[in-house]
Picture 1 (cartoon, rainbow, N blue to C red):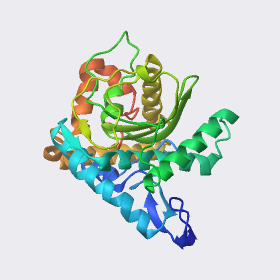
Picture 2 (cartoon, rainbow, N blue to C red; picture 1 turned 30 degrees about the vertical axis):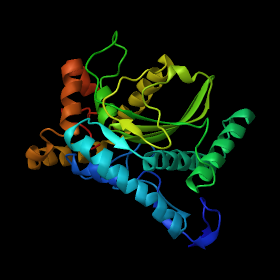
Picture 3 (cartoon, rainbow, N blue to C red; picture 1 turned 60 degrees about the vertical axis):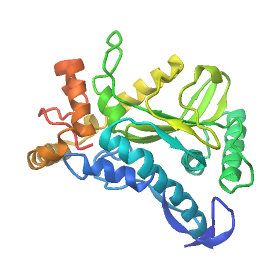
Length: 309
C-alpha cells in the first residue's frame, strides 16, 4: 500500500504495523484457557490479534521493531514468566515507550480527530505527537516535558473499604488496552500490556505526584518499585477495571454459551500450562479477596467459569 509514512513522513510502500506489539497478544493467548480474546469494542466477536494499520515505511518499521524485540526479551517475557526482576536498560527502552505513546495518540487523533478535547488539549496533544515523532527520528535528544513512565502491576493483595471491583487482579495482571486519560491537571496516553503499562504525558501540572516509574534517556533501572501516584489515577484504574469486567455482561446468550463451553474445555485440557500463570494468579487473588463476589464480574452468569480473556 502506497502512502506517506506517519513517522518519517516520506512517501513509501507502507507496512502493516501493530499498535500494541503482537508479542503481547501471543502471551495472552498462550497463558489463557482459550486462544481467543474479546474486546469492549465488539464483545460478541472473537479476536486473535490486536489492531494493525498501514502506517510505517519498511525502514521505520524495522527501527521500532528492534526496540520492541529488546523490550520483549529483556522485560516483558521475563516478568510474565518469572515475575518482577531488576533490569538495567539503555536508550532502547525510552524509544520503545515513546513509540507506544505516539502510536496511541496518533490512533486517537486519526480515529476521532480528538473531537472531545478542548482546544488547549488538542494543541498540547499535537505538540506531544510532534516531539515524540522527532525523538523517534533522532531529530531531538529527548522528549522533554512529554515524559514516559513504565508501571508494573503485581496484583492487589488488599481491598480498600470495598471500593475495588472484584475483578481488579484480573484487570491488573491480564488486561490489554489503549486509552487516553484526562483530568484538569493531567493528560496521558495509557497503553496496558498485561502486567505492564506505558504512560506518556502530554500535559502534567503536578509531576511530583508521579514518581517511581519515570524513564530516562540514556540508562536506568526498572524493577520492583514503590510508585507514588495521585488518587485520581487510582480512581481511573478502578474505572478501567470495571469497564474491563463489563465485557462479559454485554455478550449475547449465544456467545455466552460458546464462551462457557470453550473456557471449560480449555481449562480441562490445559491445567498444567495454566498452573502458576498470570491467569491463574489473577483468578486466585480475586477469589481470595472477594470470595463469591469475584464470580459476579468477568464470569458468565450461568457458570463459575471465567470469560475467555
